[in-house]
Image (cartoon, rainbow, N blue to C red; front, side):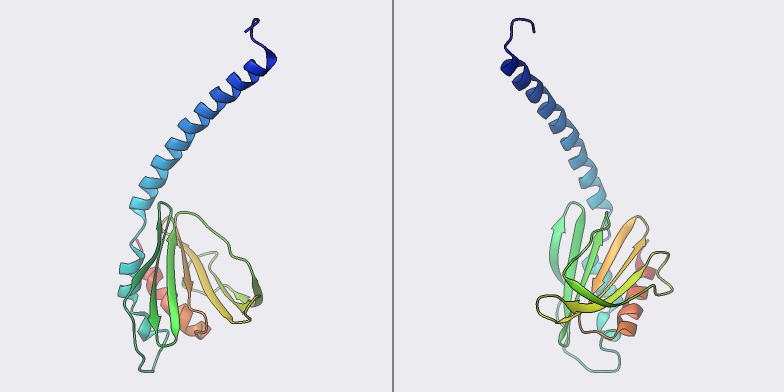
Length: 166
């Protein structure tokens, strides 16, 4: 490279580096696709859990169909309307986070494995209720949102989902 200008050497080095990143990136995509294939179907899990029996415990409510909300290589989610509450079930190969919540209560419910968290709070923008439970089981992270649900009912639903996962 003695005859090449400094600019040409830098561009050549960047080209080689970007080629290496592309190869690494394509390997990561292959791993992500394999991880997605291993993720349980959240719509099947949510339907089997029968959210209306826990979220609306003791009340007759209209129950909507279970619908796909999101599907990416590493995250799948479904939702179902139970009365006035929309229940979201997300299954992921990684632990995510959320923001914009003024937390009023953070507990660790039993029966959901180590590290399970039930967060109760209010949305920073709207002031609406935020009720979410997160746990880990069988190599996947599960998030269940049922904003406005009684915490005990949300926990009961989470236990049903927990038992249904491999």
